[in-house]
Image 1 (tube, helix red, strand yellow):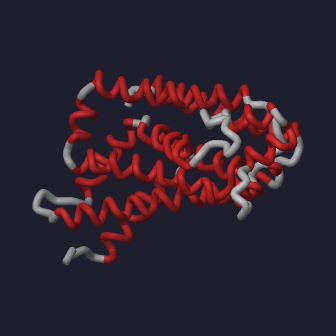
Image 2 (spheres, helix red, strand yellow; image 1 turned 45 degrees about the vertical axis):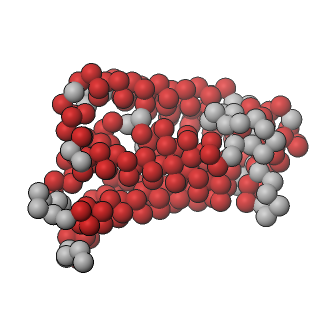
Length: 242
């Protein structure tokens, strides 16, 4: 049985919660997927982010995060790859046709299985196919599937080496050399739950926002705002030293 105090667990949970729900590329992606595809389909995005976060945490617990933090070349490669992906997502958003988003998001939760992209295609043809491709999504009739949304969220999260550095600094504050594997698993599991719920919180907010984006003009400004935010995040990651 894992021996751990409630005070200890509360402090750890609050620390991870603040770091997780702070607006960043992953949360912006969750918001966008909630807007585009609805809450149900954003579950795949939350899972992708959670898997990436857990893997980063495991790397930190195993001590490999120290290697990444100490290796300038390795850190730079991961950082540039993550930055390039964020810029790519941002450019795709800027190029996406402006389709009223309230056409897409509510349909994503339709019990018939019709996706938001499907509904938009039925009303706007080629324009909606561009929207489904805005985040690298498939242009098949069903729109981006769960695997595509999972992959997008995974790479956005995994492309940030600073997360591993953060976990490398975080876990020594709550783990001692003699701690059991079960104790480490409990902390990583707690992190997984928080990461998943944080993504879903933003996805729910996105689904709510979709109702406000009922005009082409609003959708165009949304694309521009989110696109610039992704590009800015990518540029900031690429230019940062650590």
